[in-house]
Length: 423
Image (tube, rainbow, N blue to C red; front, side, top):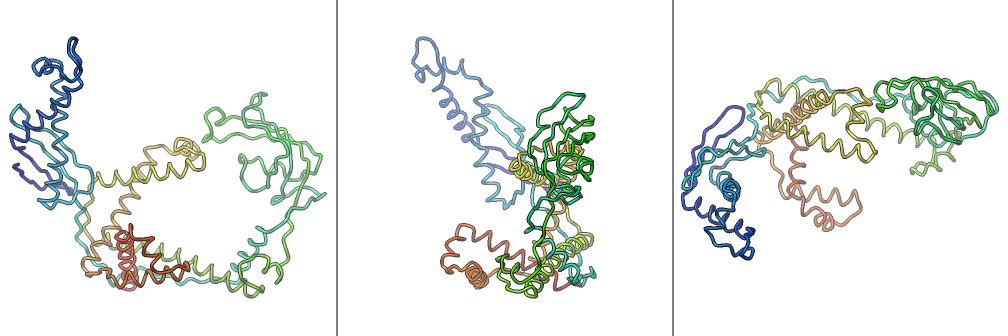
């Protein structure tokens, strides 16, 4: 098999292949025999039709397509293995010449992005120190108290933050619509779980009150209701307010977090908030650092790779939406976003992610940073301690993903090195 390799622009390689005549004829014959087994002609049993008659009943184009497809995997594998081409997307394949005795095929293969790394050390990005104020600690603890609050009936008028128990029936143009009514429904005023403007109109009501709530459905809503005016007849049965537990040692113990006193809870909360801010600061810093390194570098990414990654991100997002009973079409309706704008944003994110990944890869090469077996053993020991497991159980659990684990650890080490080497 003859091959001619031509380097193209934008990380593409063209491989022109002249298939051996014998291999091509053998593939055609094998294709014919396979199709001949399915030929049915009156007077002959299926699979026993004479060759001359069978050939008249077999679609020539289908036979050639099957023959070509039977050869392509082995040809492509040989290109990858013998010509040391590393593909990063499915190749484009065209037949450039075909006859009974000749077959020539052209592969356009997408290869790894080209990276000419610029300055990646000594950059002034601006690291932030994670600081937490006493006010933030108190607000976090107040949120804990709210999460553990009890609802008690109140006789006075409803206010934002209260919960009303009500019956409601919605109508558009005087006609009820599906999903527009409920009985003994509990709604927290100010939770923004209903149509904009709905909850605010229930402020100031008492048990036994009736209220007609007038709202307009958002333009980004289900098509049958979008932009329409609606009236909800609401009958209030109860008004409940939150009663927060007192902040004392008893409350702290009941949380079951491990702290015994209010002071211990405050200290633990402060540590949690600092850890959260450190994570946020790190992500923000790395985003700026990657952008600066990319600005100093020349990075050429094939368009196919960006589109493939964007499609993968889209499918992942659709799966997560499906778990909440939402489709992408519904999401776009609610947000008012056009699908082409949505995909453009995904492609921008995909390009950024791919760029950052190959920056890490190239830095790893320049720094000759590798993960040794001793490094793996150390990480296994850390995981064993963290999850209270035996090291051998950790190793067994990760044995099928050990190379991915090693690679992820390498990426983390490179990232840590970049943080150390820049300000």
